Image 1 (cartoon, helix red, strand yellow):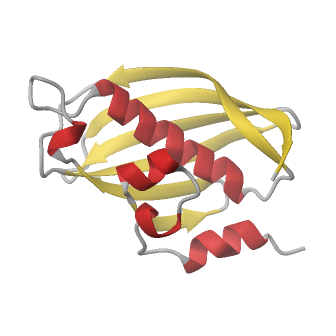
Image 2 (cartoon, one colour; image 1 turned 45 degrees about the vertical axis):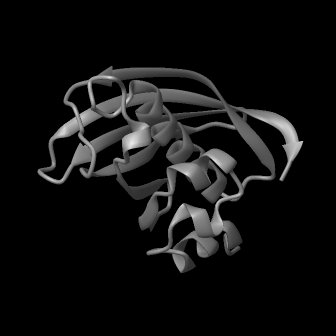
Image 3 (spheres, helix red, strand yellow; image 1 turned 120 degrees about the vertical axis):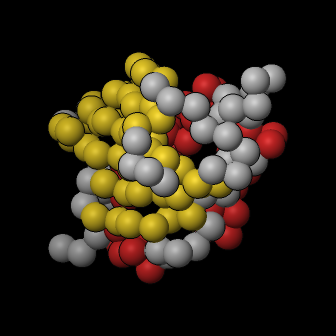
Length: 145
């Protein structure tokens, strides 16, 4: 059986979220989908000034949103019938990112149960150093997609 959602993501590699995301936040973040495989997506972002904190580095809430959004996309790509929602998000912030930096957010499904999906995600800079990493669980909501 073919996974039409995964095929949709594959056909949109190279496109920005502003062109294709059903999520208003995803459109604002405007990442570019650069890699898709079963259980994992990679999205490239450029840090914009409105994404920074008073220290002029990527705001922790924005980086959390990036990871949460990419993990949500990854769960959606599994082609499941129901919408899944984040129930927890544990983040380690390791390095700063500045305006103009290109960063890469990569998600990975660790375990996809019937009700809960466990995931990991990380943000890396162009030097492949980890900027932030997280673990998360998403739970089925019963809302049909």
